[in-house]
Image (cartoon, rainbow, N blue to C red; front, top):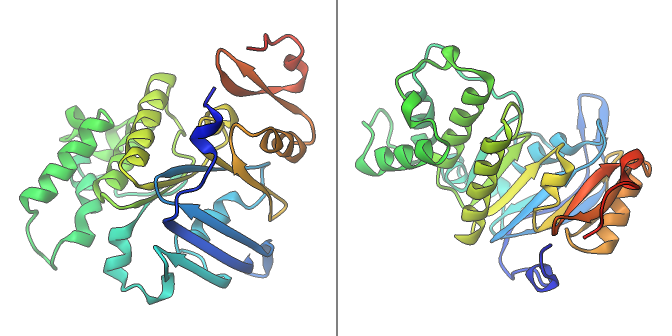
Length: 273
């Protein structure tokens, strides 16, 4: 388990903050009033039951959905950022992200460098280096000359993750980034996240894999469009709120020196570290 000192105090620098009165998709109100403070140099995982509003919240934070209220990026209202400058500060990996299947994997990842490029300019050495680094991190460099439509679901997901990493932004937002990834590549993703956080970036991810989310620094627990709890992953209050959000159908336990979430039926047989 992480030590209490690892999550005892938030860093002073805020990557994203939100003061929301609510958000809707069409006529359907999805999010209720909430306030968020998401610091730099920290991984925040958003969790909650199906339909709780997790993806909607992430899209609002990215500026992809309108909201009643204000989102601030690095201390500046999101609406005041010029489009290209904002795209250099926030990288986005969406759920079931689309891309042209006839593009080569290398070209898909290069799309992440567009905010850094002048109109119709050829890729710079810095662009090529960023793309190469991102594709090696996600273990898709060998696939660079393959078309996206030829790849498996997991390979495609890793190419799209590389595209987000190639932006080299201080804020990285990911919605269900572990979709289609097998356990070894999930472990690679975790290493990438920890490296980004260690470098001072803020990582915010929506995850269904609750035990993986418990490896983050902080949990944002969303229930019925409301922020039920926001706190360190190793805090007992966070564990209680997590169990509450899922109707007491999961139990958070210490197992093999880390926190895991188990289906309630299996909780009694788990060994407690």
